[in-house]
Amino acid sequence: MPGCLCGCAPELGRRGFFAAAVAAAAFPARGFSAEPAPAADPVLIDDIVTANHILYDQGVVDGFGHISARHDKDPSRYLLSRSMAPALVTEADVMEFDLDSNAIDPRGRTPYLERFIHGEIYKLRPDVMAIVHSHSPAVLPFADTGVPLLPMNHIAGFLGAGPPVFEIRTVAGDASDMLVRNNDIGKALAKTLGPHPVALMRGHGSVAAAQSVKHVVFRAVYTEVNARTEGEALKIGKPTFLNEKEAAAAAKTNDGLVGRPWELWKQRVMSK
Ligand SMILES: [Zn+2]
Image 1 (tube, rainbow, N blue to C red):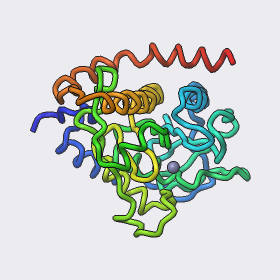
Image 2: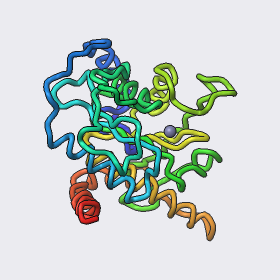
Image 3: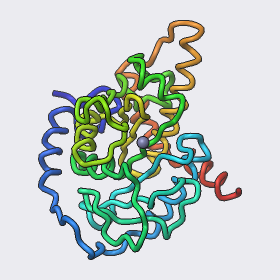
């Protein structure tokens, strides 16, 4: 089977995804430990802080939403801010977690209720190095109506044949508070995401995954932009979306260009 033609993890494809998932299960699970991994690269921590500020500035997150990165020295750990508004995150707020989403060295800091999104996706997707969860407003109509979110232009080619939609009722029943508040729900979401770069969450928001902080910020921003544009297009007619081959080719090109908007967005938040 050739690689998936949508914007999925390009090196995986469906068969590769399941093989990778098996490999991910073999990651050394440390369980709870008070022992931090070797210190993460300060550049990575700085990128996480910057990404928090960019995602707020670009209207992807507000008081809610979060971004994580896999620890660069230990793939069985990830880095995520304590529970707070993303625009206010500093280096001291970035915490370390194992893949069961236990805090390694909390030092009194309260973790996000929905950190399980991150841990379970990192478990299932060894290719994923960064994750954004948001409730960005233009995406919600597509999460809630069944109208597919499809690439309006080349910049959103990573959307491929459209993100899958996670239905929390399949794992948490029909009376949950909609939050991914434990590993079981996180695991179900990760399975829905599968090899895709983005999944929508009915009644909630979306999640984006990628090979770096810069790539995942790009995807989170342009998922929101594409949703806004598609919503406008649907009001005036029937859009012709990129087909899967166009989307895959565009996604491949754009993966080499994510540094350009990152530098612009970074300079913008740093000048404020
Ligand atoms: Zn949420």
